[in-house]
Each structure stands twice: as structure tokens, then as C-alpha cells.
Image (cartoon, rainbow, N blue to C red; front, side, top):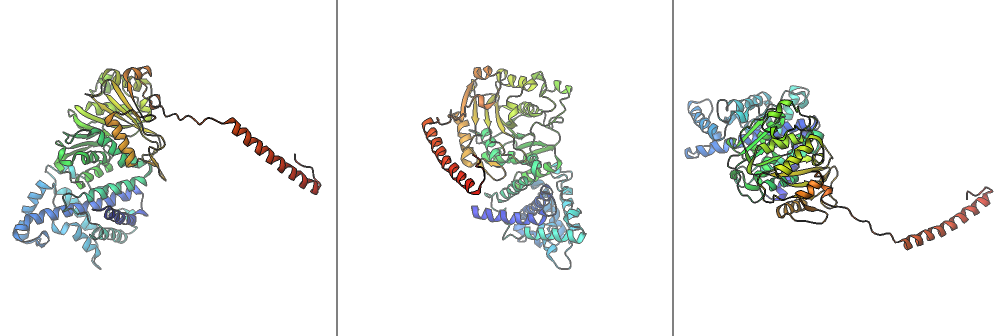
Length: 528
């Protein structure tokens, strides 16, 4: 698919989203438009799979006559295979295009009840099967009875039929699911998530990490690797970070799949949809909805790649009971209740395999705050020697916050155990100023990755610090202590300044004389 075709597809999808835009907040109409896209995807996948099974009989899925003995016999056989392979089942009359076609009819176009029943049936088809957890309440945020879709039932039906009708136009919205090399749907889905994030204010940070930042983390944890055992994100949001790692090595090259945990139920649903829409088989991902710090869901497991963009300096319980928790017990002190940054760091390190790499986004304060955080930081550097690099990012590149952030990279078995790399990518020229927020360009990302990979020392950009140097700074990792970005001002030429002042004074004398003349003519006292 060409860039122009991608642009046209994105424009078409955003116009469809705009049908809902004026009726509700961005994070609300996001759930509807992405839900409809997901329903269409499930329908097309079901139809393609069934057509493949029926090809030997010379019929298509749409040819099956539901309600007849022969038709139901076909459907029972297809259901069994679809549940095993796809994880769900849809009858021909339940497919997206069938519902959209009914919505387009005149006089018989009421589809709300049908749609509610079909979305419920998708979940019911998985009950008691291996895929049940992955589809459980997946459409719960699509409240088709909400008055935000319209004041009356007729108004709601009209709007839903309109949205589905536009989405069913394959001349404008073609996801190319029959092209194994294409990820048009995944790209379109991620584009919409980013668009919704830009309009969702502070809420956006809960479900989306900007693509350029995700790319940096993904390329760091896959550096020098073409395969991974597994990848884990304890605050996975919409799953964008996990999927970005997959783009670096390929979905099929992550042997034990994608593992994540997310507290927000709506965002958890978004992540599961995102996985399936990007072609991740339901057996290849293990996402849980729970509080990661309080009720971790993947105890006993370690992962080769660990990535995260945790909520910045969030509150957590810091209950004394956690002092016996294996994640925190060997550090002697718990991170403060008012700042969970290091609680997430220690949780992630607990799950990092010995041959793995971990990259986490944190606020700058995590680099230099004292107290228990300073004590934990000292242990990580002086005793464990797990910190590999610190990368300072530009301010205002995350949705909903303008605070400066950094990436901390950890490895339990480091190739460079005697030093730590510092990169300051926050200065002028290292990003582009956009209307609402700053943006890392592809060239900026490449520079960060190349500098990290080669551990290059670049004046006013990067520095390789010895452990002794860090100890002298009392384990303070504030980047300006290691990367000097000071720009000396050009020397002032006093002769030129004096000459300019003399010229100005001479000009002022002429002006004063003219003002005095005007005042004399007017018979008033001159001000000077």
C-alpha cells in the first residue's frame, strides 16, 4: 500500500469518526469507532476462513442457508474449526456486511437489537474454550443504548447505520486482509488511537505512547536480536509498546508471545482488540486486567524484553507488607507512597530475564530524587550494576503532560559493566516543535539509537560516565551533571557597542532639538 493510499484510508476513517465527534468526548467516541472496526475485522476474518473451508465444495459462506438441516450441518462443522483456529464464531447473517446492508435498507433498517445480540454472541461463542478470557466483555464499552448516540432510539439507529454503512464501503476502507504481507488494518487502528489520544488530554497517557518513543524503546530491547523469547509490559495501555517490539523482530519471532497487565478496563479491552487486529493469535498473547503493583498476574515468569511507560509519579499503597515481597525485599526500603516510579522499576526488574533488556520511561525526578529513591538508585548502580543507559527526552512529547522525561535502560548481564551511557536528546535541534507538542523526527530517533548502540561520545549530546564519576555525584543521575550542553555566548565587542551608543545619542540630540522647537511654537515648556 502506497503512502498516498494510506493517507486516503486514514482520511476516510477520520471522516467516519467525525460522525460521532460532535456527540461525545474523544475517549468515548473512540470506543465506538474502534469497536465497529473490530467487528468488521472479525467478520472478514470469519468469512475468509469459512470460504477457505468451503472452497472444496464449490460454495461460499454467504451461500449457506441458515435454518435448513444442510445449512446448520455446515455451520456446526465450521464453528468447531473456527473456535479452534480463530477463537470465535459468527454466522453468515451475523457478519458486519449483512448488518450494514440491513441498516442501509429503507423501511426495514432497524439494526440496534441485531447488533447488540451479535456482539454478545461473539463472546458467547468462546465460552468454555481456550479463547474465552481473550474475548470476555470485549465490546462492553459499546453501549448502543446510550443517549450520547442520539436522543431517541430512531436517532441512535440512524447514526449507527450511517457509521456502519461508511465502514462497509471497501472502495474507501479496504483493510486488505487477504494480503498476508499487509498490516493496513493495524496501521489504521494505530493511527486512530493516536488521533484520539491527541484530543483526549491527560487521559491519553493512559492508553497511548507516541510512536517515536515506542520505537526507541522497542529498538533498544531488540538491539542485535532477530528473535525474542517473550516481551512484557506491566502497564500495557492499548498495547502499542508491545506491538512496536513485534515490528522490530516480527510477530512470529516472539516465541512465547506478548504478556501485559493493565488496570483500566476500557484500555484493557482496547489492548486485546489491538492485538487481534494486528494479527496476533489469541494463543500468543496473555493480557490481564489488574493493579500491577498490588496484584501482579504473572508471578514466577521472566521475560527477555521488558518495556513500559508507567503513569508518572503515581500514588501507590507502599504498604509495609510489601517489604517481604520478592520484588522489593532485597532493597531494604520501599519507594515512597506518593511516587510509584521505582515501584514499577523494581517490579519490572523482578521479571527481567538474565539475558534480557528493559527500557522504561520515567519523569526526570527519578534520576535525582533523594530519600528511599536515592537509596534504591544507589543499590541498582553500585551493588547490582544493572543500569546501562539514561536517555533524556524533550519536554512536551507526551499527550497530557509537558514535563521532561527520560528512558532508563537496564540489563542484568551488561556488555559494558564499567560505565553508564548518558544521552541528552532534549536540546534544540534534537526535535521538532509542533503546534501542541514537540515531536521526535525519524532522524532524531536514529541518532538516539545509533548513539546507544555504539556508545558514542558526542559533544553536548552524550557522555560515557564511569561508576567512580557517578559515585562522586552521590549517585545522582541528573543528565546535565554528565552531558554539558552549555553554549558560551559570543564575546561582546565593546568598541562596537560604544560606537552604536554614540550614534544613538547623536540622533536623540536632533530629536530633542526638534521637540524643543515645537514646544516654543506652542508656547509651552519643553519636556527636556
